[in-house]
Amino acid sequence: MTVDAMNEVMINFKRQKRTKLASLVAVGVLCVGLAGCGGSAASSSTDGVSKEEVSQGIVKIYIKENAKAVPQADFKKVGDCVAEEVDGKISEESKMRIAQGHDIMPNEKDYDVIYKATTKCVEKVRG
Image (cartoon, rainbow, N blue to C red):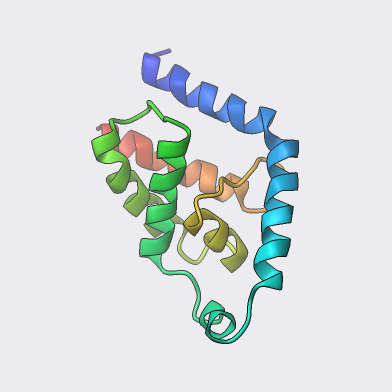
């Protein structure tokens, strides 16, 4: 197993380890966010989350987790690739969470799609 593969395994291990805590925090953030919705914010939520917002969210997550699977200079490429791969395959709620820089945990419904897309894109970017 290469160093990059080990780093990817460690990132996934950390995700699983933080699942309960992150889920509780995410629910709290979601509740606060929903309570604050109104006016133009409510109408913009019907427009959906763009691929660019999802891509930027992936970059935020990679930076926050200090991912070592790819060089930081390539985070944008991975983000663009993942956004393209998951387009139309995940819920708007998951897109919104990713766009805000929140990771999708293993116990959440769109995790498998995002995990497969991320793995595929990291391999693609690394060459």
